[in-house]
Structures are given as structure tokens and as C-alpha cells.
Image (cartoon, rainbow, N blue to C red):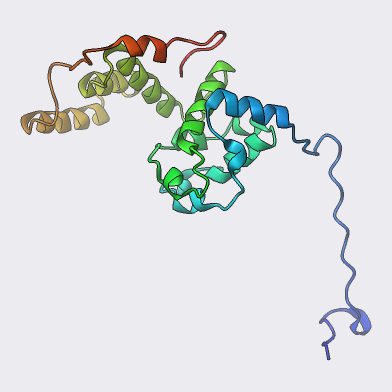
Length: 212
């Protein structure tokens, strides 16, 4: 026999308030055309995600994110790109590929994150993690120039734009760079890719946009 609920008059079950229905402004209306556009532009089958959360459970940086990786995909599926405009998640993603390795449907989330970065930049949206965006820009600039990254130039440019040439962080990194140079882990002269014809096609700017 079921026991009466404590606090209910005469042992009756307390009435529960019916949740209010969302207003027309709050209601989400999925648009399949938007998802098709995202998939065509990014090359990622975002619609294949069914929310198993393996990407989020395995992500080593999810503790620092305001949205879990699966939530990013879900917002895209529902056409809620505006929900991602102020999110730091896409900028914190390190593209470590852990999510892609764990995904049962092989949704290339790192590639999707990169596409979102580019799309937000095209929209003129400020990045919550501005230093991450700066590093992203300098990295791509180096790759576009030589086909590979020259670490000395990358870090020098980053330090000059963030903390100055003689700031404590710059001095700390300079010491680390000197140690790496002595051990042969850092080169003084940048290397170049011999055949760089593919770079022009890779970094050709789409109409109405620019790289982040």
C-alpha cells in the first residue's frame, strides 16, 4: 500500500503546477534548410549527431567551456546560431580530435568548431576569448606564408600583441625558447614547404568573408 506524502493535507498528493508553455518568441522552430547549409559549408554531417554525449564526456577541456560540445551541435541542428555568438566553447576547443575518435557516427566536431569560428568572424562577432582568436589568426597567417608554422615568429608576434616584448610572460617564454633552441627543438631559420601551390587554393577567401 502506498504511503501518504508528508506535508499533504489529509494524506492527499499535493497538486503540481503545470509548467507554462513558452511564448511564440521563446519557442524554437527548427529549420532543416539551415542545417543543410551548415553541412554544405562546413563539410561536416552535423545532422548525424544524436546526442550520446560521448564527445562531451571525453573532452579534456569541457571543464572550462560554457557549452558542452554536444550542445554546440544541437544548437546548430536547431538553427540557433545566435546562441553560439557569445560562447567561449568554440574558441577553447583545442582540436585534439578526442571527440571525433569517440563519436560513433564520426561527426568531425573539431572541423565544425573551426567553421563556426570562421562564421562568427565573418559576422563581425567579437570573440569572448580574444587571445585565443589572436593566436588562431597568427597561426593561420604563418601557415599561409610558408605552408607550416615558424614557432619563433608565432610566439614573438603573440607576445608583442598581448603582454609586450619585456613583460613577465614574454621573458618566461623567451627563456623556454632559448632552452628549446639549445636542444635543437627550435629553429632560427623558418622552413618552407617546397610546393606551395595548394596554399593559394586553401587560403583563397570566399566571397564576403575572411579567415579568422
